[in-house]
Amino acid sequence: MERKSTRLWDEFTNFYTSAWIDLPFTALRQMAGVKGDDIRAAGWRAYDSWISLMNESTNQLYSNRAFADASGRALEAALTVRHMSDRFAVAASAAIAVRPEASVELSAAAISAAVSQSRDGSRSGVTGRVRKSGAKAA
Image (tube, rainbow, N blue to C red):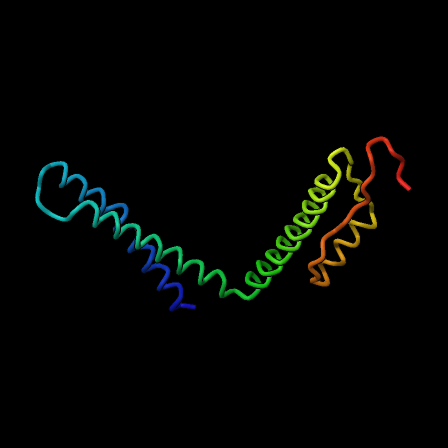
């Protein structure tokens, strides 16, 4: 753990030095007309040190097994919800495209079918009952 903390601290000091010391002083020197380092090069060094700092901190965060497992489960849940909402959108769009005057009624059975299909990994779309406006559902 000592090595990881040291590496993160090195990245932080590198970023702090390049972004908060080198970059402003390079800008001041350039505004004063003193020959020296280019402001663009100093900006790129600050950007590179920021990227290195974020990369190292992300690596250390995901090296924690509990965090990695929790974030993996959260991503899977988010993708499942997105997949289900895509299915509902396709079903609603298909029902409206077939009969523009029809209203879509997604029953509890259609919702549970979508959930079970998402869990099974099947790709077939969710279909709801399509009925004409004002008609009673069977």
